[in-house]
Length: 229
Image (cartoon, rainbow, N blue to C red; front, top):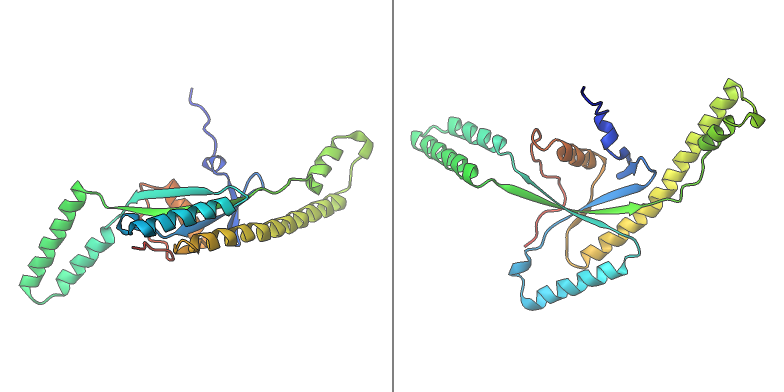
């Protein structure tokens, strides 16, 4: 007998995305910062020591946890190959058309033997709010106790509206504290001469879509932080 696997959304901890932040089902918040890389091996020994010391100071300055993620995936070059076909067709010279065709075959054979990988460096900043019982929770508890009695429909709707407003106010307050943490992380990383960008709502949706659809999505570069040499 087949097991009931449930809804895929049950496996995703994200409840919503707003104000460039993730709101998780447990009430905690996250912001994700994309960081450009440094070609550490090309730096002089003195520069390497400076980077290590600065990064150490950055970590020691934090009084909250952070999570670092290196996301690697194969780049889909279909668009690039299509562009080569269009360039070849637009050439009036048969020689140039043949050269572009040979170049395309070289790219295809190279990628077959050496998949082109792209790395994205991410820093996740969390904020865990102190969870106090909201009006909806209190309502559920009191409803189960006969002493409190039942409320009419209008009263229940007022309670739900007040609970929703209370939740929105809490999220706004928590977002402000999360953004303070994010600014601290950004300032610390910039002291190491790293390019930093907070992912916005659209970029967060794209990021998670790519996470959960690795075989069907095309790798698109999220604008902002590129590699630094």
